[in-house]
Amino acid sequence: MTTAFHALHAGPEPLLLPNAWDFGSGALLAGAGFAAIGTTSLGVAVAAGLPDAQGAARGETLALARLLTRLPCPVTVDIEGGFSADPAEVGALAAELAAAGVAGINIEDGRYAGLADPGAQAELISAIRVAAPELFINARTDTFWLDHGDLGETLRRVRRYVEAGADGVFVPGLADAEGIRRVVGEAGVPVNLLFVPGRHSVAELGELGVRRVSTGSLLFRAALHAVVETAAAVRDGRAIAEGVPGYAEIDRLTAGPAA
Image (cartoon, rainbow, N blue to C red; front, side):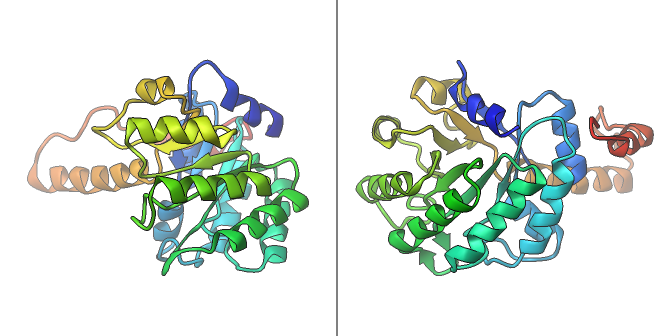
């Protein structure tokens, strides 16, 4: 799965990576034919009653990773900032995920209090590279996401993380076409952007050189919206949306490794 996941970043079109938050969402996405599945740290954390991006959902992330590797496609896991500031602990987590069959990880430099020191973040990436050399390391920088930097700072961090062993870089919040072209041109590795409704389409991002597009927490938030809308429709006597899968269809998702 790991080799196949690496290859997906070199296809003719960007890899569209939908992000799951539990086994059911992952299995449905795999069944819909998506080439790979990621996880959303917001979805994983909130589904467990925990805050996102504060290192609180390590156990839940590991448990979900083990479940998702039953799917017939590569899986990449969002480990927030690594759930530790200790490179040895982050490396051990990466090794555990690789041993479970995970093909890639996403590690971010955003922290609850702002951006991590890029040198310290590079140490975490290096530790992952040594502990789990087969994993696809997607190094996320939150310079634009947290409004703590400019394009120059983004590029400095991107270069630092690639030198530390990252296989790809993720710059959520970057939307300016010229800025995207610069990151793509200088990164030297596949660039991942976050899909934002109303901005660039996947095809447009591909034309700018982006090789991977993630949905992030969008699907999780859309699912929560559908939950409330459906409950309100039942309460108000309105028709519910068409296409809701039946009980047996969902129950069959757990039938086997090819669910």
